[in-house]
Amino acid sequence: MPPLLLIALLLVAAWLVARLPGRVPWAEPLDRVLAGWPLPATAFVAAVAVTAYVWGSLDPVAVYHDEAAYLLQAELFARFRWSLPSPAVARAFEQAAVLVTPVLAPKMGPGHALALVPGVWLGLPALMPLLLTGAAAALVVLVARRIAGAPVALLTLVLWLTAPGNLVWRPTYFSETSSSVAWLGAWWCLLEWRATRRGGWLLGVAALTGWGAVTRPLTFLAFAVPLGVIVVHDIVRGKQWRQLAAALTLGTACLMIVPFQAWRVTGHPLRSPLSVYTQQYLPSDVIGFGLRVASPQRTLPADIARVYQDFDALHASHTLASLPATFGERAAAIFNMQFGGWRAVLAPALLVGVLTGGATLAFGLSTALLVVLTYLAYAHLPQWTVYYLELLPVLSFACARGLGRSLSWLAQRLRGATLPRGAEAVAAVLVLLLTLQPSAREVVAYRRRIEHLTEYQRQFFAAFQAIPERRALVFVRYGKGHKPHYSLVRNVADRQNAHVVTAYDLGAAANDSVRREFPDRTVYWIDTAQRQLQKIVFAP
Image 1 (tube, one colour):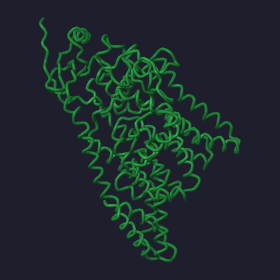
Image 2 (cartoon, helix red, strand yellow; image 1 turned 180 degrees about the vertical axis):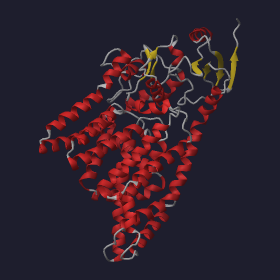
Image 3 (cartoon, helix red, strand yellow; image 1 turned 30 degrees about the horizontal axis):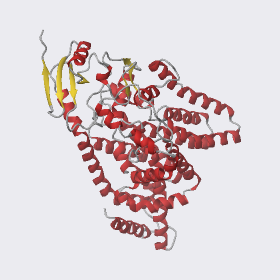
Image 4 (cartoon, one colour; image 1 turned 90 degrees about the vertical axis):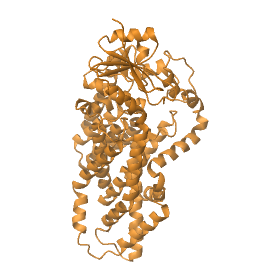
């Protein structure tokens, strides 16, 4: 939708609101609907439906390396395992973000993978990211409605659900789908606790913050600071020391899963899988400024090395002197997550919302800003905005607050009198209708984007699944044109019964050693340039 047309339509919406009769017959029923359970329920269903449509499957390809690692970790947890023994030929099973020695285990914290387990058990791995997105949508509405009323909550939902950042990053296995729920849920519990002073709500704050911390540690380090200030301030004023002690105990108990995981995977509670992986492969990929010069303990396969080849240059250029430019680039990328494309015309409403939002919105914005500032300690490409997915509800709410106030102010000026009851709800519904068509077009466009993004891997994995034998071993040789971000060598949690096990083609001698580790599997070979599976028959 052209920006000028959208502005004109918004002005028409304000004029229509100004022309409402003194008593709107359907205002009270609309208010009741928006104030009751149908609004969060509708938000849940709409978010699941939109994300499922964009993703296109309940068993979609894990596109990026980290997605595949999270899914592998969830499959291990579903089998009540923290790790697997290292393969006999470890270098044949190298996988980004996954240790292959001294054990085989993903490098990630356990929070998100634990949330994915029910979907793995049901054979629908995308189910939990979809349900988590639905839960996040319901919480977006509940928090926004609690702070600013139902009309603003409806506008917030519309702006949040179809934001470019959500359409890009929510149809994935990335951990931010879990951490978003932890973030919003902790805020909801905080609001309830401050209103009721019941200790159970504070325990909810502690549990959800703990879950977030074992899912996205750096994000929740920044998240917990403003939240902790508010909680301690209120505890001191109310002298509710027992509640604080109980919350701290529960939060600490949640965090104990991290050293427990480290002990089960690496043998030492203070040596995390992430630290081992970093030492083995990417010693320069650490928090800090400038390049840390150190030699990796293991050599990455050529395709994964191509993915990481720019990391040294990225860290070398990430200095204290470059922080202003880095902050500007990342802020612009985050802005585009929310206001990319035609939504840029709504950016002035964000400014209005920020200036008139009050203390609660200031708390949310300060938390979001602190997350951005905290991540300045880590070098990453500006376009890797998934790190900031949790910030979108804050930006959507601020914009919705500003848009609602701007429309109401304009309509009141046109009317020359106080707006009738239900006018804000009518304005929210009109904005929903105005943005429905461009938002729907974007949803379709992002579905096509994912279809294009996954086409390369889907073709190969479909060929692997079509292998007629019950158990197969496929050696993969990457030929010209291989896309290194989209690996075909994936470890499996059930080596014994998995239909297909994939491994790097390392030459006859190494391949023979791998084959001996899987003696009951039919052996295939594929060169990605030829895109044809070849069955290998060995002489008896």
